[in-house]
Image (cartoon, rainbow, N blue to C red; front, top):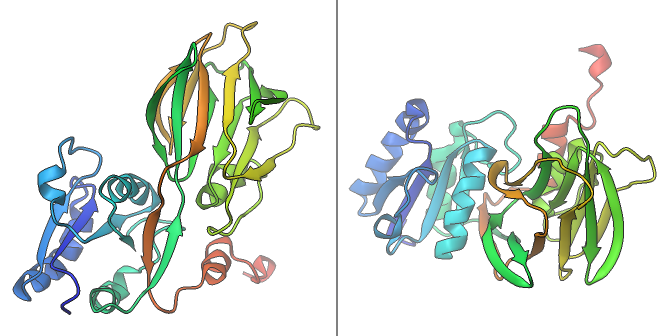
Length: 285
């Protein structure tokens, strides 16, 4: 167990049960000469001192925590793995019961690697772009007023595509294909597929269907100027901005990917079958 010198356990520090469960691991690694520290990816604004010289992030929690931790992995260009303390766990594939054994294997260099893309969102006003953040799963335009639809115009690589009328619009990564996009009828993509998903939310027209486009595409979304409806911009479920008239939301593949570390026996399709109960006959349960 000599491959790593410093690892960071990332999670919600207010969730005492999660961190209590890994305290023995932290103590064990510290006794073996590995610097093991904890960080809350959502509440720590200055993480530079904690992340200095870190070589691995271990996310503790559910997929929400993994989404937050992935931003640290992107920012500091550090591999990440996850212990699932949540419910569904599409992203965190190490069970708490196997955590010690699997982490020992990873720290010894026995693991599978997988690169996952992120997407970046920009607000563009008069062709001046300002980045508002990154998403591991999806970027969503959501209506903020109950009972009113919004109209979202989409442009792909400078070519106008459609005006979508409904509850909103999703641009998702392959990782995010099993998140909000899936519940709106979007397809499932294997993570290594270099593509983006464009998925309308509860569209008014049955002709308005999900699309898959190359990851190199530049996608521009704007709210129809003929309406007066409030819309928010969500990155991985967190509202970061509002759509104002005259503004474009520009979405591109992020400049780099993040590296996920999996147990050696990890299989993406096994994970899907387990989470979505494929192959199980629910009628006899």
